[in-house]
Image (cartoon, rainbow, N blue to C red; front, side, top):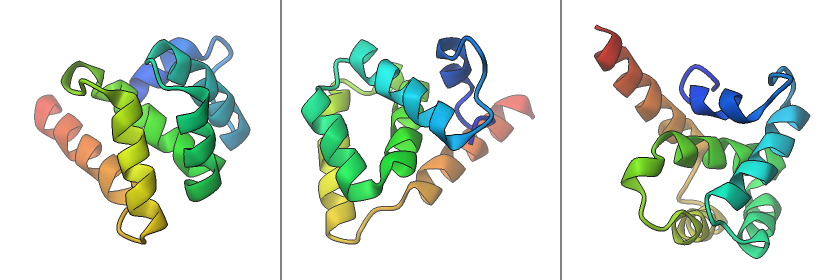
Length: 103
């Protein structure tokens, strides 16, 4: 996941080696991105904290192309609640994009 979303490491002064460190970093980063505490808590409740953190990492990685990250997170949370969203394809899309850039 960190290979797909290396920008998260810029916000983790001690690195990210465990899921709880990713979640803590995402909780901080969401504020920088203008994502409300309520949207973050809803995502954590619906997706689970680890998956919500992965979504934040992916949104951060694509921050320049996402006009309203809080609205986007809420939309993804709604899709997840309906069973039509998972983080895997989101991470894989970023990895494919990275591989294309590296080639």
